Length: 79
Image (cartoon, rainbow, N blue to C red):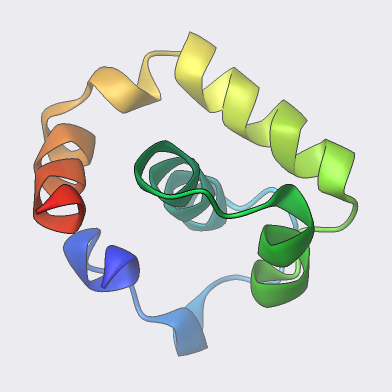
């Protein structure tokens, strides 16, 4: 549901551990659910659990969670 809200296909996510789409999806899941960093690293192939924290933290500090697209996706996931 989160991937759909961001208009992403899990099958076509880029291979890079810090790919923008992976980070956006991880940030959305962390914001809307209680998913763990370990689960995210395994499911999204993002490397180490500590890396997910760093990627998502940079995304948040960079204003990624304040964009219209992110807020819209969050509202679709949270309801």
